[in-house]
Length: 111
Ligand code: AMP
Image (tube, rainbow, N blue to C red; front, side, top):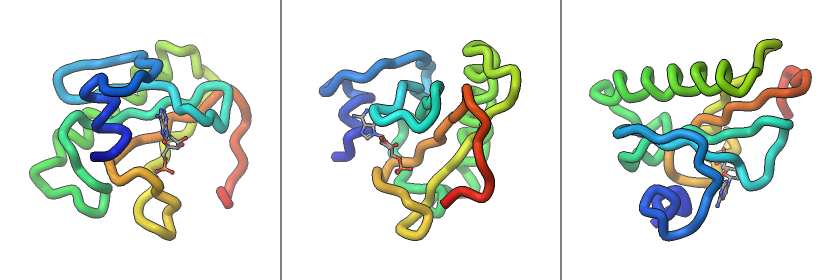
């Protein structure tokens, strides 16, 4: 079981900022920016690469939730949404998640 499934099941604590029937958003334990949230589906999808066409509405919902949270948290100057995927993508937790980063200028390209 991944650490994110344990957060969904309330087996371990997290700083949860949003929840609905399909997803959960909480603060990253090692923030890389003043605002660093993770938005995850409650359903276990291992990665973006393993998502299916039938997940399209859910994936769109996760993006919309990220945008709503960015507005709610006052990221009016911009922000970044990242989905690390697989080994080269730097994915460390095998449960699909969107990083929402903001509150400082973010460089490009990432490392
Ligand atoms: P990634 O490297 O894209 O797979 O991102 C995984 C993220 O999960 C990292 O930014 C970690 O800091 C974060 N993370 C791992 N465990 C926890 C946890 N228990 N609560 C909150 N964030 C976590």
